[in-house]
Amino acid sequence: MPANLENSAVATGLEKVSFNSNPKKGNGSNYCTIALISHASKVMLKILQARLQQYMNCELTDDQAGFRKGRGTRDQIANICWIIKKAREFQKNIYFCFIDYAKVFDCKDHKKLENSSRDGDTRPPTCLLRNLYAGQKATVRTRHGTTDWFKIGKGVHQGCILSPCLFNLYAEYIMRNAGLQEAQAGIKIAGRNISNLRYADDTTLMAESEEELKSLLMKVKEESEKVGLKLNIQKTKIKASSPITSWQIDGETVETVSDFTLGGSKITANGDCSHEIKRRLLLGRKVMTNLDSILKSRDITLSTKV
Image 1 (cartoon, rainbow, N blue to C red):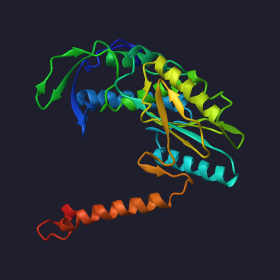
Image 2: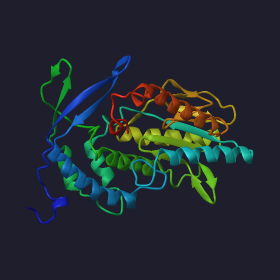
Image 3: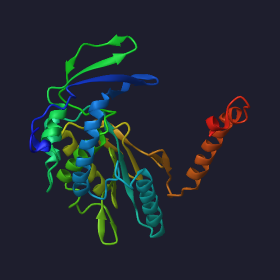
Image 4: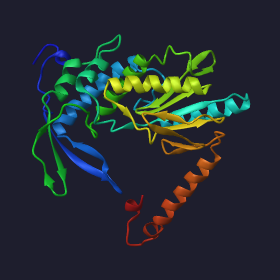
């Protein structure tokens, strides 16, 4: 056993991974692949995740709420609604850009992922992270059978508990290189400039003018492409409190919307949550209606119903 396990070359047991392909309804090209990992490997990944979490707590900014203890999508949704309400109260224009990335799990370059994990004052267990993907092979399972083994040169495993942590580091690397922390563009709140709010790959850019927002978007786009991530322009949306010009990026038009669904919640033009509360209540009633026959059945025990 090496003296320094975290930074020694050791076998991870993850050189071979099986992927289960799940096409989304109505579009075979729009799919996600779920990694099937052995239980022994999951134990090691859980230990590595705990080590990596300590590093992430030091390196990630408050703008990132994804996969962090005590944080969640509700925080970013509440923040955005509060910003919209305050902007209306003080009669200030506000501009949002909701960024969507294309194939976010599949496009991460392993070398650049390693560099992003080193981009801070503290050091993660770099060697173990490198060995996690070194010389990796995969096979894909479908209903028609299993493919031959092939080498993987990029991407992280969807279904691996470590992948969200690795993406957070990747996203932080992009934002730092884009200079968003130092940028003058953004929204001034209590003497602090806020230009973005993130939940993992769900990134919301914000500014007080159309020109500032476009500048932020182009910086993020440029730095994202340097590390292998591309914006999905068709799913990237603009939300503005006043009319704006049509945006063209790479020959595609960025759609401007009045409402946007973020993390399952609808962000309205005035930031009001009453519509969302009613929608959630209706969804709850629908679920209870569907369960009505089960809950009233005398053939099912109380413990099973509970």
